Image (cartoon, one colour):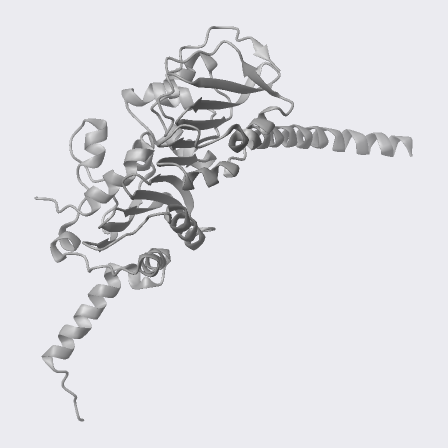
Length: 185
Length: 191
């Protein structure tokens, strides 16, 4: 029987393609649709997640900060999806509400908007959407700044969601910061 | 025939009354939930926009999932609340929004059942109006309309609210600090 050898470079390409697909949730779900929509709307391109962040990301401190207690994990293990846009132009001038409508159109039906904050003065936008995940919740956070953006999806327990909901306007920042921070441990 | 009629009435009446009661609860909730979408167009003119939607499911999560001593007061505060909806706009200049922009909300607050509380005061500048939807003597919903020259905030709480503790909602669940003074007992109503 004749076997076919795949060159090493081919293996590397396959691994890279798989990693990219995984980093945006295979682009087939709502997370991927949101990333694609941002790319089309602002004509930007998301970058793959830094390897360390992907391997070691752990939201360890948010709930602790809120509760003032000992460190504990916020997002459910292995639930984080993250897409990062760095050093690109997010020209929001006069288009904040347009983007908001486009984003809501992508997620309407399956996700509920929890918090949406738009700042025309500094060009930042934060959107938080929720959907049921049996006894837990999926939370999708989109943050747009003049030169950077992130899309984060995590699964939260009802308890952690309830803690974050007490200050919903800060919730997006907390989730995004923790999802993109490597735990030193 | 008469006996049959009486039996049918006896069987159906309790169910009908229950259905009517459920329908009335549902209607009260629908009425206390304001339509705020007419305000969305203000986002294009505002320098800052905040939009918070916490529905019944999420209120239930907050009421049941929070634990610990710190949470007791919050849980008590939101007990029975079916939703909290906030829309807040900050503008760079004065007169960037007009009374016409708020008219759709005001027209809903003129519907039967809603009353404006006259004894509400705020430490902040501008005008803060509090409207309550009464179901008999019970509060079935609440709306706060805060209009400042460069700021507009509408808060809608669906479900029962303890008016004496209204100020405690500030800073919680996306409700901004409106500088509300504690409401004196036996709030006077104005239709």
